[in-house]
Length: 276
Image (tube, rainbow, N blue to C red; front, side, top):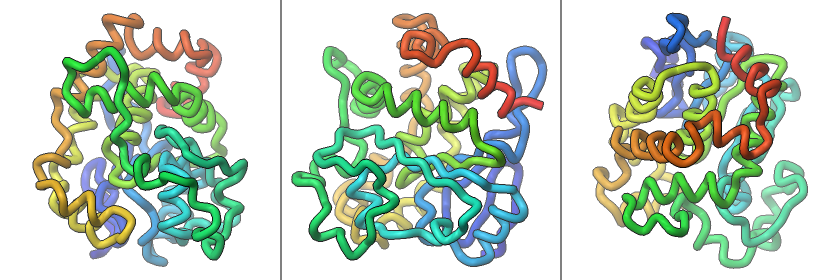
């Protein structure tokens, strides 16, 4: 596939769910800026042309990886790891059964020795929040990220404020963990609730290709083939409900961020990254 930009989609040979957070309307009549923050599925299978376009064309200088340590070790080093100008930061949104102070310093040859015990139980985004038993499972998962890994949610946003060039936020599919971090980023930029929901739901447009891509990886194949495509498809109601609960419980995403140490100065820095 030739790499082309169609609207906000960034069409690459090695990814299925890459798009730019630029071009979204804001509540004050503006729009988010293109080429600042991208969201994506796993970057392991980028082609040489993809890397060239991202680094030289988009100006990519930072990768925010939301996968678990186990996922990173099992998938191995992606092609962007060979680019010295691109910084990689790791912020898992799931509980870790083991600990690496610098997961990107661990070589693939050490996988058999370094995989945390019980890694398979926490490989995919099934973490759920307590006290929300009545909510949809996906909503509970997203609340679980915010409840159990608030430190890494904030850490990812903090890293985005400090990037010298364009950043890409990704997990495996680029819809759940990436969706939550990007939703908070867009809220800080002043993108209204309904537009954040619409951005989240865009992944449904390419879900068949995304599931097929993940099914080709031994890391994710079992989960992909054990459930139908519909169960993997993001629903607008999921993100709508998460944002509504943040409104009710914290005064919105901004209130949640304030409560977890991401204050006005850092919010202003992230807003500046996403706005002209």
